[in-house]
Length: 205
Image (tube, helix red, strand yellow):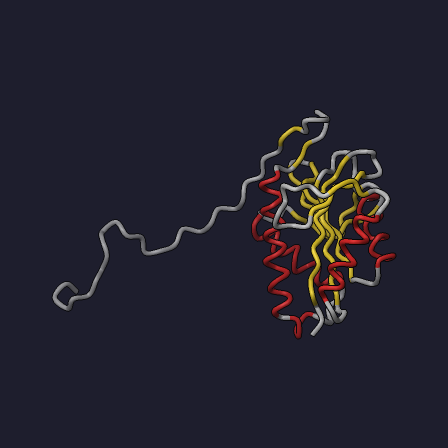
C-alpha cells in the first residue's frame, strides 16, 4: 500500500466508531423541598433539544405524517426520547389523576411528563394545560406540552399559544434561563411550582 501511495493511517487509528453512550440521569434534591427530586436543568434542556430535533424532522416530513393522530405522533417522540434514555420513557402511563402521553421515569421517580395535543383554539389549549397540571404530583417539577397545528399562518398560532399560556390562571412567570425554549412556570394543583415547556409544530402542508 505504501508503494501505491495509499494512506493507511497510523497504527493507532480505530477502524470503527465508538457508539454514543446512553445519556446519564442524575437526580438532585429540590432546594425548597427536600422531599422532591428534580431533573437537573441540563438534562431537562437535553430532552427539550431532542424534542425540537424530532419536531423539525416531523415538519420536514409533513406530507407523510400530517394525517397521523395524536397517539401516532406521540409515539414518534416517545421512540426518539427512548433512543437516548435507554427505553425509560413510556406512553399512556397512569400518573395521579389520569394517563400521561409521555412519562420518563427513573428509579421510581417521574422526571419528565408530556402531553400531546392538536391546536383547536385557546380554550381547548387551556384545558390541555389543566389536564397536564392535574396529572402532576407534588414531586413532578418539569413537564411539556407538544402542540401540533394544521392551521394556516403558523406564526399567528404561535402567538396565540403564548397569549393563552400567560393568561392561564396557574401561570406565574417565564424563567429567563431557558433562552432557546418556551418554558413557563406554573403552580400545579399540588400547590408546588412546575416548569412547563410549550413546543408547537407546524403540520400544515
